[in-house]
Image: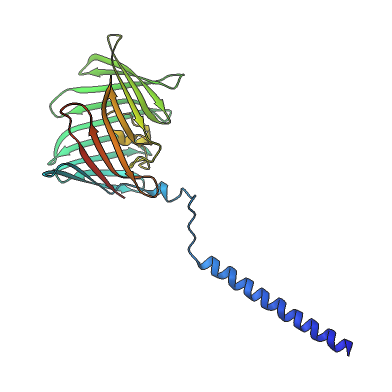
Length: 257
């Protein structure tokens, strides 16, 4: 009798064990089949690229710009006013940007690099004249530049860089400090952060080359402020320009990814 009871108990135990294994197995299979979103993953962020930008200056002045890419390399930017900027890469470095309006040459920027850093920029314009910049990287983290215009030595300057953003520009003429510009940034992603090669370019007038978004632009005093709206990945969807100077204009830029 005891032997039969033991046999029944073993069978029951085996049945319970098998049942638990089946339940566990199904539970694991179900969890794997569910889409998993890792909110801490940065992988999707590295693929975010601006496809379109709409800048509204006024109700009757709206410019739409579209961007084309080859992977993370930018191919072109064009707007509905006939403007086109074409980008040329050598390897992973941007070596030329050519701008045209209605297929007529307007300007070009050509870049050279040394040890992976921007060394020179040559800016050519359709109305004549060439401007060139030569950059020197200093031990204290600043960048010095010299500007030559049409073969004549022009101004020089020092750029102070913090976290990849230009926060101060000091401009000198014949060794005398003439202008100091101060810039402030947020800690969110620049819309063009993932464009390959943009982080190596230096252009104080194009804030698309910086990792973060410029919130304040001051030239020896308050000048222009910018406010932003962001998406869930901390990329801007809107930028509003607030010119605090007298007679200044405001405009709105919208980004589409």
